[in-house]
Length: 583
Image (tube, rainbow, N blue to C red; front, side, top):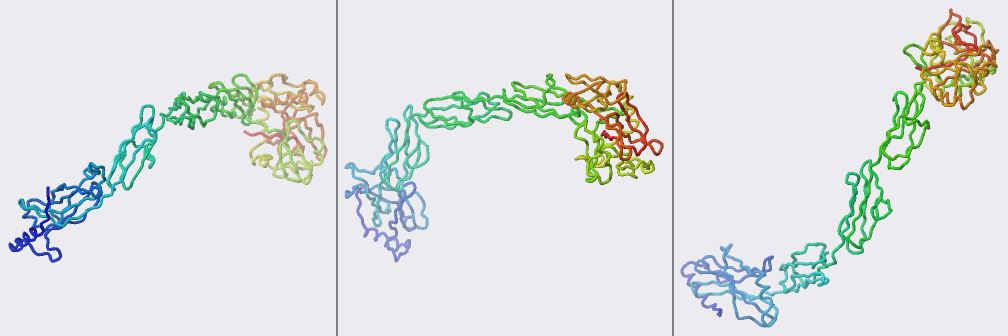
């Protein structure tokens, strides 16, 4: 459409409108409408124009006309954009979309679009007027979207775009190849939209399809794995096996490695299985929790070695395991779930119908200079003739004591006057003995000694004289006695009395006695007795105090020799052995 800029006509129309009172004169701009700025937006080029509302009311339409300029070649075709919106503050905008610009980015001669000329117009019922013409400079940018290797994949979206406009580029991998990403960003989207601000080259990178590495457990209940996925040819993958609770990892299906985490090179589609196994459970327990404790229970790998240990409580001993084995501690190879029961035997001694006791590990000993109490290290230990040194300041150990009362220092006295031992009995057990707290131990009464020796079940079968590792004495056996393998015990006494008749009746070696002792046997050495500072009958007989007095100046003791054992009343000043018990 041929356009003639007729400013005179526009002026005439304005004067007519002024005379009609429809238009006020704008001293800064006589024309009632004019062309404004043009700017790029997200969707294209926006043209601005101003027109007086009353002027616009007499117009059939108004808007912007534009034409393209290619290099120095100006096209002769004007195009019109009619304003479709109501005026806002005497102004309006129209939009030339990017799609229109890009469609006309080149003319038939191949020249690039360089400018847009535009002008505001107003159409008065066939008489068209325009405002001043303006020019908008166009910047075109070249987008080159290419493939890293067209044999592996193709890319679309290359072209010439107005600066600030958007372009959509798409990567399409060919069969057996995959898209790894764009050269200008971290995104791996096949299709993306970008804003063009300058000449730009973007490369879509394609690679040969990766190999699939599949890693999984042989049993999901036993463990988990990581590392599965697609990997480029020749790349390295880290795979990890994690056993679940009470399970363990046995190895990988493709090698002998038992490392939980390893690195593999992926050169083909590969499947690797992590082998897990459930641990076997070993149960180690006592036949009676009151008799002892057992350690070693737990989960173990098949074929592993476990150590189980039975620890008897005081007054009990370990006899054997439920499978007949007597080793303690012992090691076992765990091949499946298994239970081992430790058989403990109560080695208590009945001293009444409803009462049992256990004996101290040896005879009571005292060090006057240090004021220290202890038990003999071995049951066969005794002091003997050195008790003649008895005094309150003696720097050595004693084990023959007068009967303990409040009038004496627990019988540590050489007085042979019974009146010096008057008063009520004071138990030796009130002292701290070794590491044991006071009142841990006590002295048997006369009735308890008597019940133990004569009235408990099978009492005569559970007592006998012997020589143990060269020491004469009396053996007492617990209620539940089982003679250890390789040992023979003969209850009773010899018919003759004398030092030699202990050994004549029966003897036990240190090894034999160790087995008997483990099963609860008690040995009372024939330690003799003391009268004042004199010691008599060492290894001939034994005399052990009770806690029971006899007629105010005496007290009861257990007396034995090679030919018998009985309860016996003695002078309190007579030094006797002391063997304590605890309930």
